[in-house]
Length: 411
Ligand SMILES: Nc1ncnc2c1ncn2[C@@H]1O[C@H](COP(=O)(O)OP(=O)(O)OP(=O)(O)O)[C@@H](O)[C@H]1O
Image 1 (cartoon, rainbow, N blue to C red):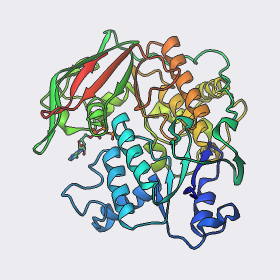
Image 2: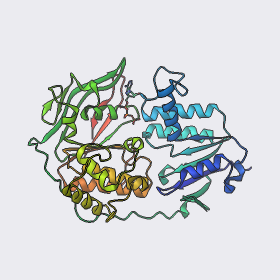
Image 3: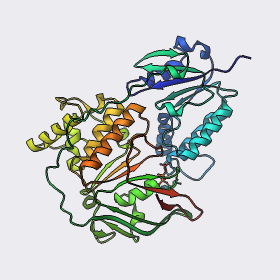
Image 4: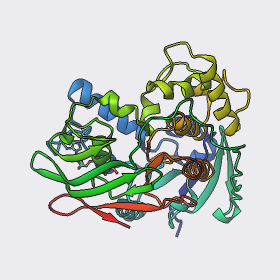
């Protein structure tokens, strides 16, 4: 019996994925001659973004035709589920899956793995993966995409993954000025419950974040992690009327979003997706002092010196003028975490900072976050679905969905 081919294409932050994907779909890659003239379908974040754009701009509900909910209001996991359903309905001969497990919680990953395992009985799959732990048992062809070139291996054991070496030189740079705040207590949720229409999301959440804390926040897709964090960052009107203490004030006592932003450092990969323009590494870092992405005022000498210190720490000595968009995704994430930390906020929120990174880059990001925790009083909330190897949070809050909304379970 001839087995159906299932490829794993291991990628890193230097792999030219769009070259590979478009070459494959157009039948231009000789290594994949087998798939020429066959019907291919792509499961990727960019495809999802295109559907979302279509829905927002032209009110075209394609993926969500079967529900009242908009794609935008769905959690990232829910969006992936509707995309896969739509793609499978088109009955493709082969499926290209670009990091399909990113942003999915363990349960949804397991379900997707089971679905793909079933699909693989009839459909050829080409999996582009950043993480070796995501390789599926039915995969039988292995290669590495370096830039534009493919290197094939007999089996996955031939992959010789480099251990990430820590490039950090010295300590976390000190801030230009300390944020004045005397209390140890930064944030307190007391019996906070949130619903969207009839749908309960959070149920009686009690959570305190204190100076120097290091939290990992997890929970299944749609359990309300982003909703919870948006109540701290001031981006959710549902925070009003709740028993919520934020940086010395009871919520609703007249503070503005900008008052809150002074105390916060925040990064989520979607910030970079939305970010356009040519900005130097120096300006990107300094913009963290002004709470803008990209810099629109002339920086002073002290600010430039501070940015230089962070660049040295991260191994970008002398690269002040380099453009941010020229960096690999992994390098961009390091810069964005540093940018969020540059003012030594009271609280640093990192919402899935390792999503879509390869093993090596993810380890660098987690080492940087551990280092920030060890060398500063900044409290950290790190959101991740994966158990990141090497991440050293002191406490964990798990959101556990129930019919009344998610409950917060401390671990
Ligand atoms: N504005 C909104 N209107 C209606 N429903 C919403 C809205 N915003 C979020 N939701 C719903 O609230 C639930 C929680 O969403 P949230 O984004 O907080 O989850 P999450 O835990 O961060 O998910 P993920 O891990 O997939 O990112 C989801 O079911 C989502 O569809």
